[in-house]
Length: 607
Image (tube, rainbow, N blue to C red; front, top):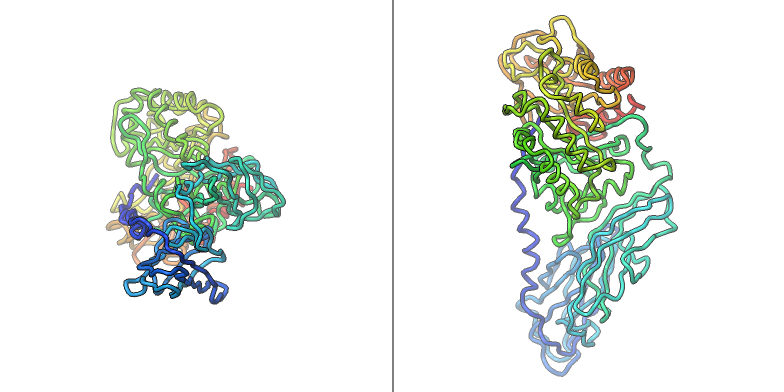
């Protein structure tokens, strides 16, 4: 694959949730007879004003006060006055200011806040006891249950299961919340919700209650999209439609899993490759732990529309992919390991394939996210044929590696691989036993792009993803047709080959002619990397004005670009179907337009 840059930005935000806990550090004051009452002063649809009144109903003065309450998931305080308000997940705490903490007998004080969401406060405590003035038992509240897992999804029902909460005196039951409202109370850790509407989005959380009738924090949320109703994507059918989602896209590109939903792309794909896991020390390893499972997404960034909390068991892209799969049950997600930067690690992995396969299995099937992934993808960028690095592992290493992965992952998981598209005689396809490995993989993602580009700074200009050869092509054998023919000639079934599409262009500057074959002075300017630009930018900044070998090209000023458009993708999809290929894949989602027009072209072209 192409881009391997991983941003470090955003790690400072790991510290932010802790700031909300500062107000909870000191122990609650011993109870004096007092009450706290809540009123909703106003409601303007998109928000509301809430007001708490603390009254000293006893005969002695109160020197300070702390009011605590829970809001359902999706309801929050946005600003407050006359109190210092902090939160821990869905639990909120308000402490008096320096000038309004003392209350004489019979006196009262109020503080207010603006809020978002439709929920009301519950589990109110004033200075550690109930807000109605009664004493709360001294045992601790239960912990949050595990985030529910959705299964057995139908048009009108879904089964929810979750891991148990803990409590020092024992958990009595669980409240199941649908879209923030309680639908039932159960004593087990599962529940089947019925009477739902087909083709509709729901969000579920769970909250435990202990034997003292204290409620704990709400669990993380799972998004559910019921089948039917005309909005559920079709099942996978006969063709694979796969896109790569990059872990680092959430940084500078600000491309989140939710964008797959808002663009309409999620309804038009069958598979996602999550890129990349690292390959190091002969093992599979985490690529970016913050992006993978730690980053907290806000409600507007989240597939479910519910913000992550600091204490939920799983955050990051993995949790967002879990929510996406609940919404689109037909989508399968594979974890892709390697890539251009990390393919050098495959040499050591090849020395002990069984140990490598075991490490990958342990990571992909980690209980924290095992439900997210449906298999593994190996992005072997030909280290034994000198990609970013060179090694001497030999042609058999690749087959041995894939055989070990299949043996470990079994037939219940997908095992796939991204491969070179070098169709030349004695080239990279000939350097590894792709034919022998084919019996162990479900399909190959043949990287039929990046054949030509400004890595040859002076040109000649040429389409980076030619479908077929043409007069003047800089290198014979560097075409999609040659690559597919090469794999077929080795005995790889056409149904195990996917054609590759780049959602970006490659370009040169200092070019003096519109037709391909011109000289250049270097790479054209690009947003993230010189010589490379997203399709969504190029379609307006340098519109295509020609086609060569099934790929569009554009000449703007002294810049020359080549890239695929919906029209050229349509041509390539027709060709792929005529060749009997298993489908198509693309690198990668964020290069597409906000309405996903390239994904739409792949979907319609393969349908």
